[in-house]
Image (cartoon, rainbow, N blue to C red; front, side):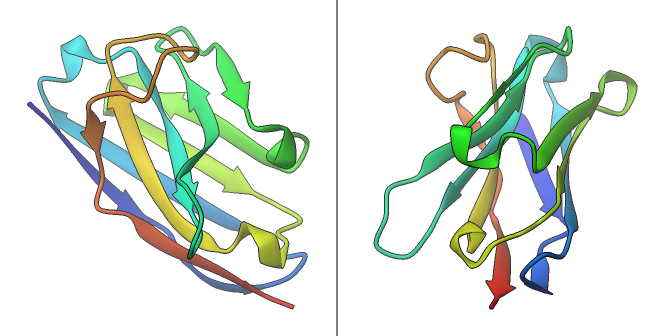
Length: 120
């Protein structure tokens, strides 16, 4: 089993920045892709960004150029730097991890979610 603990959400004005962190513990040797998904009220959960253990990345078109995902394999931690935030980025952000690649379906493990609210 893998446990994921997120931190770093909050309230920010449009144009601002936030950094999310997600630390994995447990059977982390089985993990390849880690990443972030988000879910806004009334909408389906969607991919934000993923990164493999080899630092290969995949981003949603809506965040390209504004968000950057990085990973510290030694700390089993993935980060999401979010800049130029927009009100439409408001959502609960979930950390995700699994055995597959960044192009696979979401991994089996999910964090509890952290709220990001961008005010206009």
